Image 1 (cartoon, helix red, strand yellow):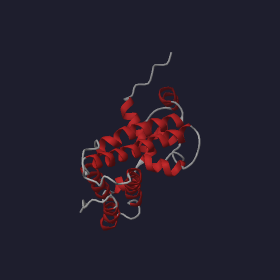
Image 2: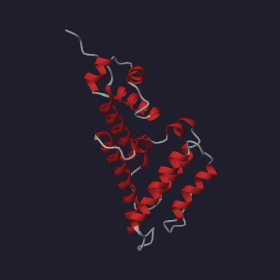
Image 3: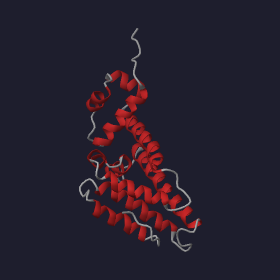
Image 4: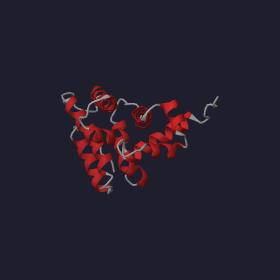
Length: 196
């Protein structure tokens, strides 16, 4: 009787997340995953499932980490200013710039595809959109933004600006250029807050 493979599940999940983050779903092969995790094919499938399941686990792991990095939406625009500042600062770090965002990358890769993976990816994108909607709602309630602000439109603008900052930094990492994008998004909300 074969002994069960011993490995640190969390460590393996982290390595799987990183390989999908680096290469995307289509460009990550089973041999890439085996090399990254050090597992044998049988152990990988027995413990985690097929490539689709592995990707969904990686996406879920990344998504749990994402909002934690961004913090909880506060009663002011501080959280949005923090997020944009961090996205601009991250552009100066080659590894972060190269990877961009796994959820955004997956959105670009799967586009309007159908199936369980595409649904999972759209679900994660939906969570991010809701996060930005909450920022707008709380900032309006706190009086940091105009009461007559079109909140759905404003949330769409700040979400798309975050997407743009993370993705465009891959090929245009110049701080001044990225600050223009971030500050234009802030200006569109009717606030005088800016990042420097």
